[in-house]
Amino acid sequence: QVQFVESGGGLVQPGGSLRLSCAASGSIFRVYGMGWYRQAPGKQRELAASITSDNTPNYADSVKGRFTISRDNAKNTVYLQMNSLKPEDTAVYYCYADVITASPATNRRYWGQGTQVTVSS
Image 1 (cartoon, rainbow, N blue to C red):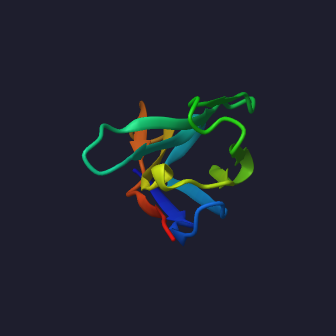
Image 2 (cartoon, one colour):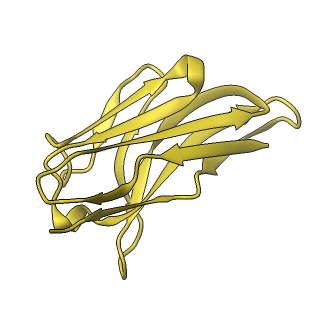
């Protein structure tokens, strides 16, 4: 019903930057909340950043001041600009979207497939 195209992950040196993007498509009536979770090896998945439909952001304390989340409602796309990256930011980053679908009618969270971010020298 809802598909995602994620891009922007990769290998970067400490202090570097990456920009993740995630575009949702399919039988979408409305997208409200969007965001990014991340999961490091051996750790639980945690929220990195989220954004409401009226563009109110929320950040984990560990990324505040370094990451910026934004969205393009016309394209059902969410972005994560990551600056001053640290080795501890290494993880698989998963985007999500809280979607009301048109047919069949559902209201639930959908997940992207994940993109690897590795911060290492």
